[in-house]
Image 1 (cartoon, one colour):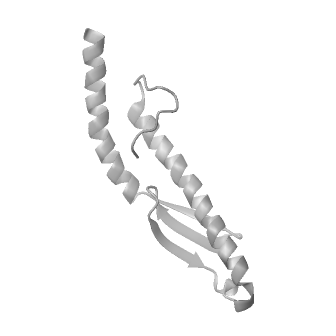
Image 2 (cartoon, one colour; image 1 turned 180 degrees about the horizontal axis):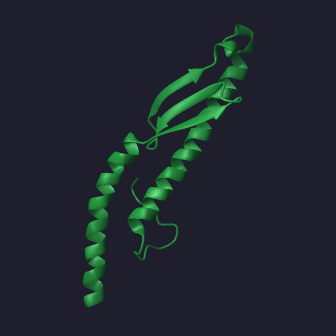
Image 3 (cartoon, one colour; image 1 turned 90 degrees about the horizontal axis):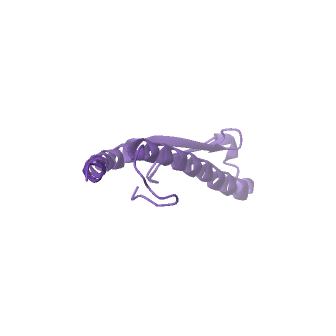
Length: 107
């Protein structure tokens, strides 16, 4: 019974920490880039797009398709970094808890 009470205490701590982390994740900004940093995307770890920077040399009307591809690539880079930051926070919160592999937490 003592182990069960200890585990319940850890679960309660985890729930409180999860709400804090939700806010931290929205305020944590990651940068993705493509084309040798000619296109940069800023976004929150939760996925909210915060900004795009495009090198003026890419604003050639004849190269619109290249620019579109670079924006998509920069966004993908930022998404990967956001996922890594989310996973790091989740590991901090769940350290020591017996959570089944593959279980998704609401982040």
